[in-house]
Image (cartoon, rainbow, N blue to C red; front, top):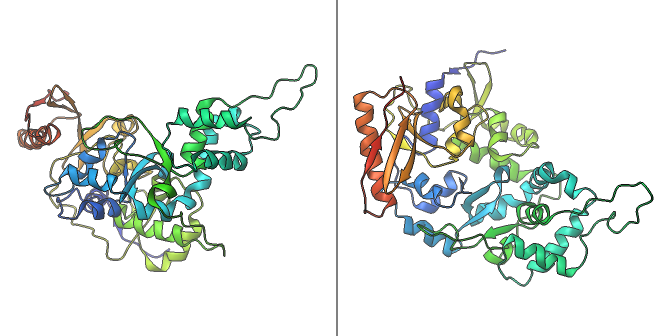
Length: 387
């Protein structure tokens, strides 16, 4: 094997911060930032605003709200079957490539309840209900579906013989999640996801909302969408292993796409010997580049977008990344968690913070409190560091 440059954890950390726009706040337009990041995880509706505030200079949350209302960005189930805020263009281009994964992930949760259900027929029935363009909650969708007749499935209505177990009938939750998260491409309509707005989920078909059809898969078996996903992922997350790529998007079938673009890429190794791929011109800053304090929202893809999250978060705290804890980066690594109570940003250190670190954390927390309250509060509390 030829010698390959080894990138240490600190080098990977700085590369990640640079790609994720966390090393320096940038002046990108909001739409361009959402596109560059490959979307922002958004099951918690207000979190993307914090994610962009931490990344963009002079971020105005009204701009993101305007993009949602103006149908330039959408909230939809996509990567990893989680709700993401993505550009309209990416939603249309990527959705068909995620279909099979979305189905399998919902089945993984509701396989028993959905056993025997004809998913193609169920999708057709769901599309028929939603064809009127009326927004519906998941409950309203399943009720409307039930009014049309029995759930499609070859086993439904079969007479059971003596001693035979009755065929399970899917519950409303299972049917609703399969329809909304997988079978019928949907968007969650505003006011859901608007700045400082609380609203329930109302769904409408993606194609109806955007007035354009979803791009179909390539009929010749090629995978141009998969290849584009590889490039886009590396631009925002590289250098990275193929396992990291899969952890970000949830797609298992990308080895061929990686192989197709392999000649365009450069290779490295991490300290464990894993092969890392990257775009030749991707920024890889000096490991000693200073990293400012940054406040990340819940479920930020800067952490969740990797299988190996050690470049940002210690193994001892890895669980925080999947429980919705909001973390504070100090010198590029998760060093505290944060929350807001009564207008005060409360920071809880995970390790000892130096006086200089605490001062910088306090300064950023004060700015965050002001942002979240529209200038109504700059109150901060930093708890004692653990011994």
